[in-house]
Amino acid sequence: MASFQMLKRVQKSTTGKLWNSSSQTLTLTDKKVWQGSHYTEFPETIQDGDNGEFTHDADEGEFSGSIVGLVYRRRDGTRWVIAWSNPLLGESKVFTDIQQQPIHWGQIKTNLDKRGKQKFKVSK
Image (cartoon, rainbow, N blue to C red; front, side, top):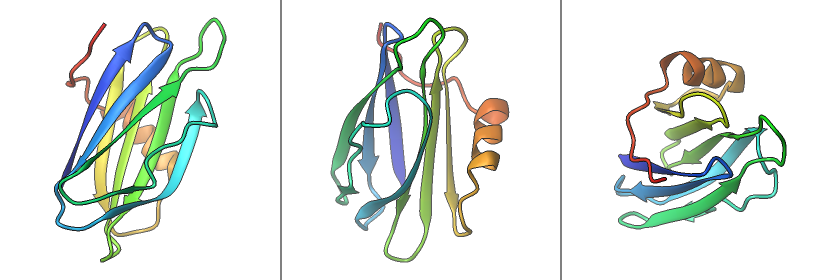
C-alpha cells in the first residue's frame, strides 16, 4: 500500500519520505509525538502515486530524540500507521501497520518498542 524511508541526521532530526501507492488519497487523521518537536508539519494529504516528505526535529536536550506515530486514512476507512523511534542513544526502529479498528497509541508504542524493525535506509 505505502512505504516509508527514514534518514538519520546526527541524531538531531528524522527526515521521512512517505510514498503512497494505495490507489487512493491518504489523509493525516492523527499523530502522537512521544519525543521531539510538537510543531512539525507532517503532510496533510498524500495523493496516490505521490510522496510526502518531512523533517521532525528532536528536542534540545542530552537524551532527546525523535519518536512519533502518524495515522493516514483512506476513503474506505483503512488506516495506515507509521511510527518511528530515532533516539539519541540506541537503535532506531520503524513500525508500520494497516488497521481498520480505532487507534490505540499505547499499543502502537509497545509494538514499536518490541517489534519495530531496524531495517531501513540510514544516511549519516
